[in-house]
Length: 190
Image 1 (cartoon, rainbow, N blue to C red):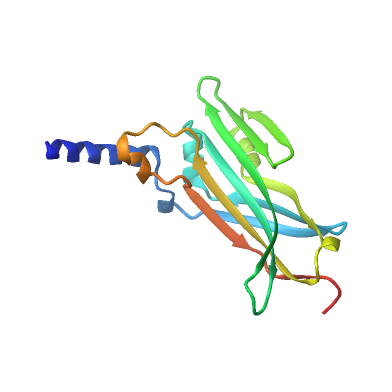
Image 2: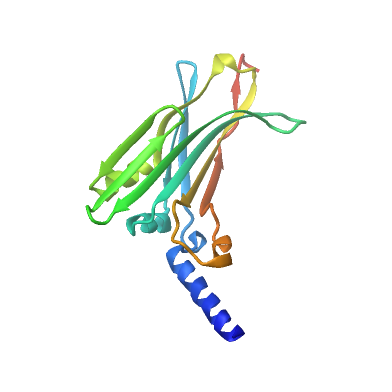
């Protein structure tokens, strides 16, 4: 009896690995971004490249959520760094096999957008890019050294049902990337 249960567990683990491949085995995805000061506002543009396994899952019809978090952090010399403000952008993408069309949405906490794409390249550029995130106005900040932290996470929405305890072995967040900018000074010259 135990032999049959062990074989079933091994079969389920193999099936889970095929449905939810490990993202660590591929080349590591990277975050690219830049920071601008426009009319006293801190504006962040960012994108993710090299997420081949995530792209493969999207192409196969697995519904994915990609969350971009942009945080403004104040740097202190002798104290822990201070969180100031953050903006979160949530993008969802799904491939409709019958219509051969990608459905994608974006929500930044205020604005909700939905788009449909027939072209994978255009959809990929839209889903992996976030432009013009207005993180803060410099006039509202105390003088000091600051930096931007970007966190990008992906997870599967409505995963394939898996039996028993196996569902607890599959991580909720499949990809998690983080990047920090170089420190920059806000306020009068030092």
